[in-house]
Image (cartoon, rainbow, N blue to C red; front, side):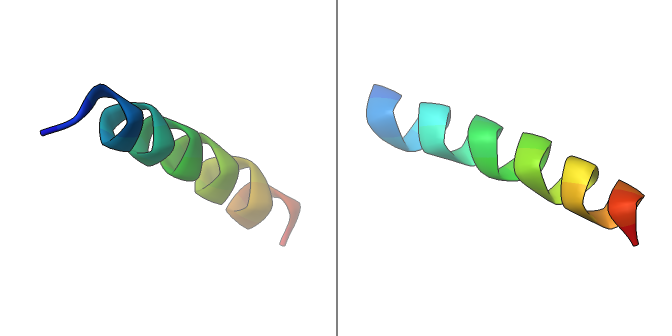
Length: 23
């Protein structure tokens, strides 16, 4: 697993949580 993929996965999880929290 690439570090860039890991970072992207982390940010996606963070964004999803924040986005779902707004709904």
